[in-house]
Image (cartoon, rainbow, N blue to C red; front, side, top):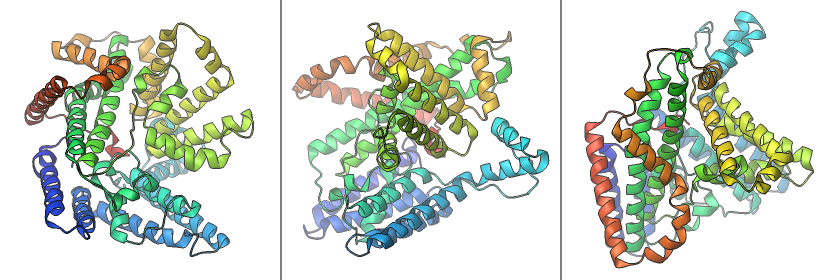
Length: 492
């Protein structure tokens, strides 16, 4: 169930908000939060089961092993040696679930290619990501959001092991943390320690509800008005014969996807944060205008911040971080971004994407970062960063590595064909392109101080509310009349 679907907007979300509000009024103070948590848990499980009961069973299994895992690693209940062994066991079980349901098809393709052509089959699998069908094994359907709720579950067990979070003894509260529908499908990845107190102590003030509504509508607008428009263009260009694209067509496809993935994913995060606020929960930000970054390192401080934080706290720092010399630091960076690529999907394109960023970050640590910091012409830094980001998105979007390399070559050596760029550039697209560039942070960041001074003024609040209603009306019209409403991060 997409946040930008009519079923969610007109049926599911109103029922959840209304039901939560009724429980706030009708239940006594002692039992109010318990009943509300159970209600939100039921709604969240229904939300996830909308995609299939098969998915729900996997999630329930994940909830069970990690809830039990908390007891197995609790410092108050186990000796250090046993706790460590139990932690390794629980993490291994989580990773096994990921391997089976997310990477099984990829592993089968590699084995089939090796069986047919020997060691060279690995190269074939890397380049084309196609099996031979020799093993005749059925493809496993990827459970929606499995990477997100698996990482959240593991963070709970690790935090309990470290003593950074208290053991959760109520399974319905833990199940709500794992399955809570706003951030279930695509984040932000919420650490248990960040939401622990909110499960037992939270309020739903009018100001928080109004702020959540605003955040949701702006996020919905980013998704429906901007991301859907450029996603449709990107999909149509990638559906053409890639090796016959002209350079302008290749550039348009790359730019369209660059716009789509930011407004699609950040829009979803905005909606998740907004719904959370309306229900009394506070989630941390997931984006901070990443397309205004002046280095790749800066980009990763601003893009998908919850994932970056997760890898930093649970992988990079335990590996030694930057405390053991430059060579070890570079190795740790490489490992983290290799794992980041693997986390994103069962395709060598994601691994190439992760390795590409790892190499750029290592180069910046070695010498380029210092040059960028000293460079007085900051637009050059921005151009370098955005070019690197867009090239990386090409491989992220491509079906296989071979297609990715072909697409990149078309950027600089396009062929002559009948595909016309102008058939995609309507007046609406041009206007939305300007808006997409401006609202990627180029307009907001310089006005942050002005906004903080002005946002409480009555005239500004009325104007802001009017804009929200206009945007919501436009979104509803587009959803009623349109057909393109895909969401990129559903596959992760």
